[in-house]
Image (tube, rainbow, N blue to C red; front, side):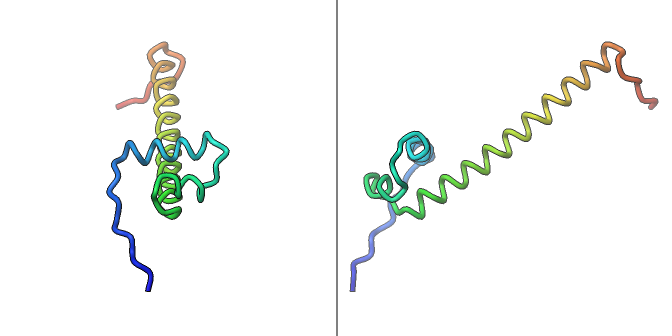
Length: 84
């Protein structure tokens, strides 16, 4: 029976650096995982998680930008003010 590997504890900086390296290099996920001594599944999971966080941040920044433009137009009197 093959011996099981123990879990390797890595911090968020390691994960981010690994994902950035995966995206920037022409290296396959399998090659990079082997070089970093992590499972390919961990590398894929980190990559997917950061992609989702990136999309969420992009949407939040877009909403904030639209909101600030809208508020700027209101203060200039370009949009009708709502009654309270």
